Length: 76
Image (cartoon, rainbow, N blue to C red; front, side):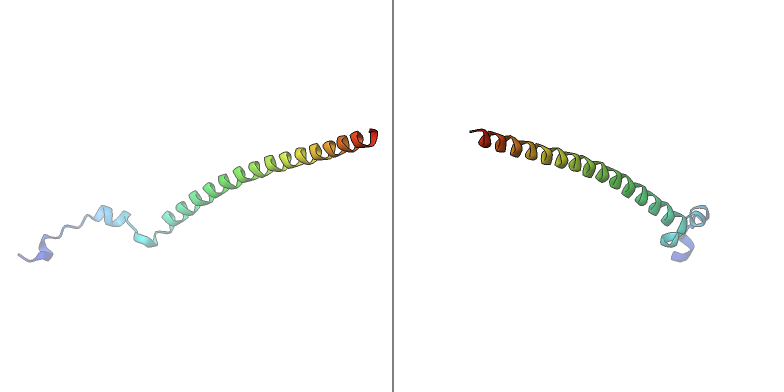
């Protein structure tokens, strides 16, 4: 018996398996990737807005401290 006779082909699997050129699978992977990137983008936007708020508060605090120091030295 030859090796070719022993080979069994699962036609159902072969019909469903489109290989590495499966566009539907590629599109689904890209959608998942885009969804993940959008979630990361949203988290980064939130972090940036929080950092901007901290920066604004610290700038205001520095300004107030400078004014307080100025007032202190001018009174003396």
